[in-house]
Image 1 (spheres, helix red, strand yellow):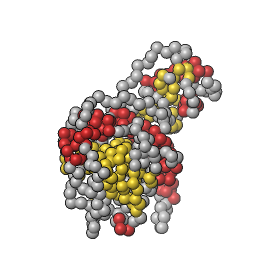
Image 2 (image 1 turned 120 degrees about the vertical axis):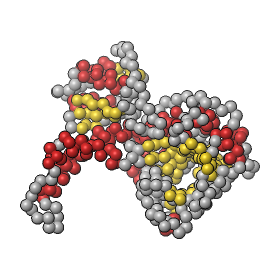
Image 3 (image 1 turned 30 degrees about the vertical axis):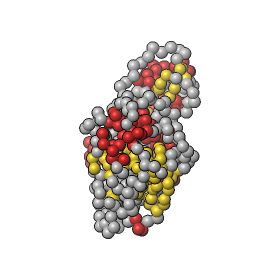
Image 4 (image 1 turned 45 degrees about the vertical axis):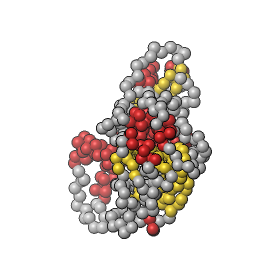
Length: 420
């Protein structure tokens, strides 16, 4: 195969103009993992075991490509001070780690470095591609994933790639163009590790199970193929001819950060928590005194009852690096025949006496009587008018007309309802 001239692929006509927005379908996750069923992917593979999915050429054309890469590189020049950066590695996908580290690269050096045999990694390329950023957030919402979801771009010439290592987050490689051969452990060496690790023979650090004691798989990815690795899975890869791929990453958010503020509030507001475990004359002989055990169980139940709100907030806020909340939408002049549709991201949970709905600015709270209305909205197929909504059957004690209009207005302002 003749060597690829990366100048010809990356240089011509680069524009900093962002690509046109792509309407979200609500099926971004299913389309990503197809023909695998999304439910099977989540329940059997995601974050549990490595899985490769055979696709077809063009499957990921709406997500990324050479033209979008050229645009992102042009726009990336303006992103100083963010996590967006470019690095190069002159490694060959070795089964053991290489002493050659990654080096910082400038935008103007990318094509020359690729022609010289280096792999290029563009970290957080979604910051330079608003459409990719929007797509990543849609996948995050459909997974109810409360951590960060973003994308790194890897471009490799023939035989170039990163040596055996693992990442502290779920790494999903989608092959855009060219081909890449992967070698990967089927399971995590260390589930959800706190740090990335590079394999070196004789390594003594606490990196979990070493590659020589694990089952490995190999796959050659072609355009439209996907490989999803759990956090902590050893892997190496190298380009065949050339390779353009996205690493869509899922970086977890530790539960502690959501629960800690909740514990602080309970510690102040709850007399049960302020009083501490009850005094008891029962001896601690082999088990916790019954009164103390019951007290702790009651406290844990209290946490579970109110933990839905911080969980919902974590699903919506800071969905990806560089995120900013969208401004509230102005309420349009509504006519009786104006039709509205419901965003695929509508989520709600009953928390005590409230219906809690996450939005980009936090959470919205509605009376629990609105529960049947939200059930109707979440299962609605097609569009509806305001008179339609006001005519929906109501249970005794259901919301009145003013409550319905207020709720619909709030949902519209926060982008959960939109004009059909």
